[in-house]
Image (cartoon, rainbow, N blue to C red; front, side, top):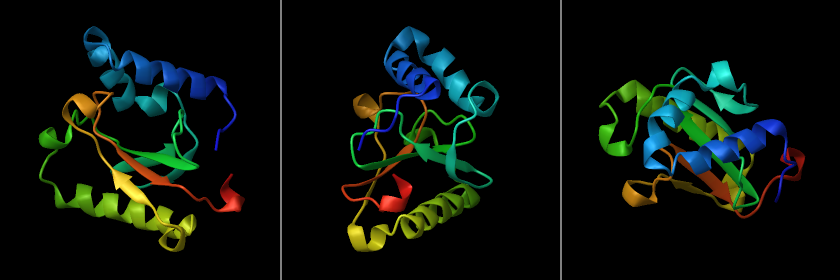
Length: 135
């Protein structure tokens, strides 16, 4: 389901596009590391290590991005920190419960290598069906 195109959404779309260009990846990585400073996004959920917000270019009726608050370029570069992963599970479980996805179905996806379009490790929580109260 398409969300309205706010200035923040347009800016994030531009960053996602720029992240595909090798020369600009350091700048995009810097932005995602300091996202709170540059672009206060409307978070769905947040804890010590992760922030979740609606994808600026949703490909599904429910499409939430979950990003670590620290700069981690890829899954293979992620630290072996149990707290980081426990907090990720907390975010996912909370969002699944909030959007009633256990009944509706959902997928949790991370991309790597040539399939990773921005130089910041992140997850996509997606569902074909959404709770009407969160449109």
